[in-house]
Length: 114
Length: 110
Image (cartoon, rainbow over the protein chains, first blue to last red):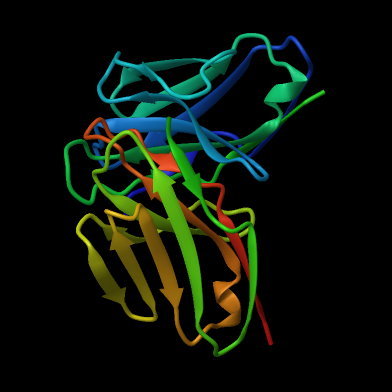
């Protein structure tokens, strides 16, 4: 079974702190994604990556950065956390190309910024 | 722009049939996906449509009409464990950037 593991399930941080969210997948997927999920808004794409060291901005990249130094690992960084970044963060991975390339999601990281 | 609409909430009775609709307006179309998400858990894949018509998978079926920008997920013989959110997602292009709808929270009552 494909497994996507997110390093932290719950985090509480203070405004201005730097936050790292890590995601690791074990199925050699080319593509990896970071979404945030908020009630009534669904999943919104922050960043995605289709190869090592490659990244593309999603719909809401402001206040976030990402790093993909190895194929299996995709990190989301909040340089200076703010209260409006309190949310559920979901990492996902999938194969590239056309066809039914299903996303596999991690269990999520619930971040609270005080 | 990209827009996907779904009803926010639906309620149905155990053993019944429920249809969850999804309409989309996206810059391109290369597949529509349905995911199920139980509270506090990760979304899991349910179905995929890229051509018009019905795809059946056990108690779940998904329909697509590309000309109408419309899909539905049909759940038959509802069970209590089907209480979850159902997410409609479109892949506008081969760049693998998926656009998700807001999700429909389904409550199955005894």
